[in-house]
Image 1 (cartoon, rainbow, N blue to C red):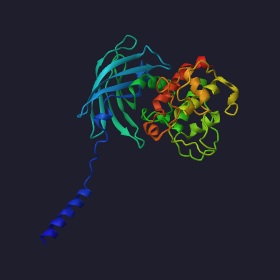
Image 2 (image 1 turned 180 degrees about the horizontal axis):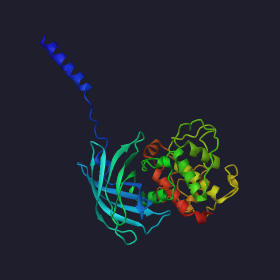
Image 3 (image 1 turned 90 degrees about the vertical axis):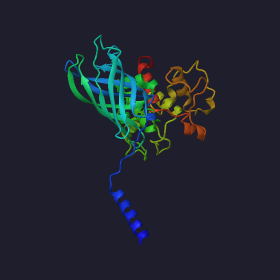
Image 4 (image 1 turned 90 degrees about the horizontal axis):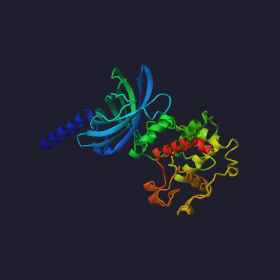
Length: 361
């Protein structure tokens, strides 16, 4: 009887626990934020006129209690990139790992905008991660004018990037080179073929000042993809082709030779009025004087002219002084992402082409 009573009490306790709310464990840790960099945007106001402001920041340290310090830069844009409108500052803040909340406050402004000190106020954000593991911050930024007049809390978002890419991501965002589908994505992750098609279309539209038209495609695997419309545009432009007659492989990470080829096609479409994918062989770009990569034999024949042209123009470099790494050859290279590009790398390349637009034409 005593054993049955104890067993009954144990089962009752288990059932009671099952009915109690479960406290979710923290999804993030200090390692997720230490030495991490981010970029984002919010809408401020200058002389009662809405102005887009872009922020990039790096968290230098984040301890086990969530206390953090770092530095940031804010660029103010009024219709175009203005290098003289910026300020830098140091910040401190906290992360609540149990609630996945982020708080930043200003410590010291080290720059100014047009010679006038700018008050930078704190923001509160929620840390989010989607099914693909992309980490982002979204919340409100307490905004002021240059004079310090309180305007109100405005929506704010930031996505993770690498420290080296902070400025280029901000510039690319200002110039409209980042597709909407990537604006809430972790830029440090590998870029897929579908995502890169969207990047290429954005670049073409920015270079030409036009809106590309979607075209019907033979691909049976793009339905439901968030970038399907841009795949259709890229296909119509001749920038992107499938991996077979009916498959585009939208979720596959793009390799470096595919990336170079798609970017080169984008340049040709912009540079030559009569270029099409079918007449590609008639439009050659100058690759003279470029040193041959040590892994030239690994570069596919279709991609070789694009790889060396992009290298000559300084748009894309090798992974070291002598190797290009066109595609992953071994399972180890595939696992390491040796020949695959990240989202921020792809967007940085797009930005470099945009800056060369006068020369390329």
